[in-house]
Image (tube, rainbow, N blue to C red; front, side, top):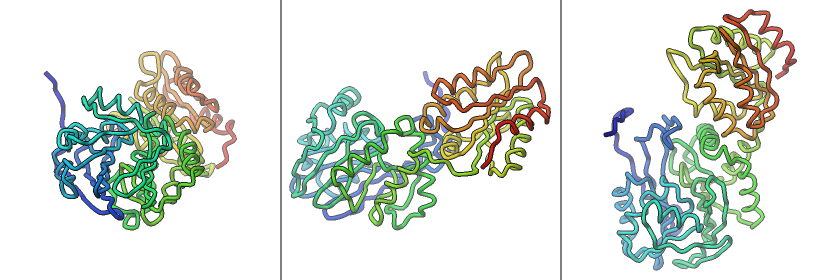
Length: 406
């Protein structure tokens, strides 16, 4: 009935069960099979799913893994407790990469009650037929295993049901998607390369949280106003921050600020037969003469870049150039797609200057592409259209008119 193409070989995931602090354990699986996160974002660096368990006389499970790893999850859980002893399972965010193992847990732990934001209960019921659920209120505290669990709503990071848990006595903040990242880094930040983590965080934030990126600052401000000063931040993806948890907070704020890197220019283009590619070469040369550092991503008949990487690079660019040929009396479809993703995932970059170059045969289409971006609130747009191959003078005059200075 269905035809699918497997990308790459099937490889076995790696599982970790490690003590984080006190009676809190990390259960992590490295998803080395995923090629496209959310069936969309190219992630050759892969991703991890992190769950946590508070042991003791009233054990608590926090989150889970993707459904395909349910058997491995139960095996990992059994390393720290007998599943039937589990009394509570906290759902910080009900997206199935964190809640896919919920049905297996519900069966293995018949006394466990799932808890979280009221919306999470709806998702568990509709997606997984899990009905043992008790909602928690914003700010509510629950005692378990001699620890105080404090729940804080952090909506739209990146679903409306998202909340975090602060384990007060351990000073651990369990954050699910917040402060997460792509890649398969070391277990702890004091073992990781910060520059690699920074890139993985930026790409993850833009593709996963980008649409709601304005809520990053709001969520962090809310946590700070509550006086939460964790000595450990334990997210649902990536490394656990035990040496310098404030570092990941500042990284998130930096990306969310939309602050551009001075002198950085990005060119994204599609070229079917070479005209737009030739224009791209001329624009790149012109920008470099003005002192810009230029990175180019081209969609051609020979190659195409990962869109996830393109968006991440645009997120801190000072200038964006988009090139597109006319295709069926409009701009090339793949550039329309990229433009829409820029609008959806980079709303905090609406003031960024954007140059649109377009080659046409029987009618220009640059306006159609400009209208897409303007519909998302981008207003600093300059259109360069040319029939056939571009004239050097057209491109030079356009760049000169922009009066760009890095």
